Amino acid sequence: MKLAQEEIIGTIYNLILNSGTREWERLLLIETKDAIESEARFMEQIEKLEARLRPLALRNNLTPDVADFYLKITDNSESAIQFDKSRHVIEDIDYQERGLFAGGCFWCMVEPFETKSGITSVLSGYTGGQMDNPSYDQVSGGYTGHVEAVEIIFDTRIVSYEELVELYWQITDPTDALGQFQDRGTQYSPIIFVQNLQQRKIAEHSRQKLIDSGRYKQPIVTEIKEASIFWPAENYHQEFYKKQPKRYKHIKRARQQFLTYQNLKNRFRLGAKKEQENS
Image (tube, rainbow, N blue to C red; front, side, top):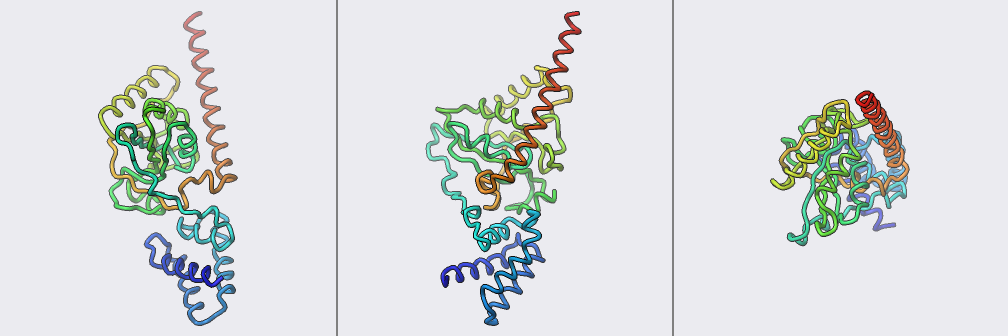
């Protein structure tokens, strides 16, 4: 318990100094730190802190690093496991590439790619903005110009960039420039960020093919831009579908229901159009 106590106190100090911590969170943490330093009962103060954080935690309204801390002090440490960013690197430049896609909340963008054969690593983060090392609060507030995105490292011997772009169309709504599904705002805009000229050609050809198919009544608004600096998101957001499976399934179900409805509507429209042409 002594080691656990030292770890918790160390985490509290770090969160107080963390620029991403909200002021009201920092105030609670400082009060807890001061009480512990005044030789108040350690566990009593941690339980008090947990109770004060709980209403916001239940509404998923804590900043990411404080949310990780809350999970630890409530014995849900598995959900706070640190994502090993050191494994998100290209180790074989001859057969590995990066892909970068924005399509709404990155929570729902990871699983479809990560579970596909040939994917080495998927990292959630922010890109396309003007600020260095932005926080989740800053991006979600629309203050930085960034979008939520996933950076993918893949093995070209197993999966092609064309296949990744095709999967991207299947899990996003390319007609919605002002967000994706229930996530509204330019920070959730659909954008394919290309790493090189070859990726641009593939993405543009695929987008034109989608336009020519007539699959959507509304214009295809997904942008294709040159990749810029990608800033990894906080640990809380990495592999969210594994850490919070129940919540993830609920969000995923809502997205799938919308896409299913949209696809059926488009099929009926195309079918009616063909009947008119043949009559």
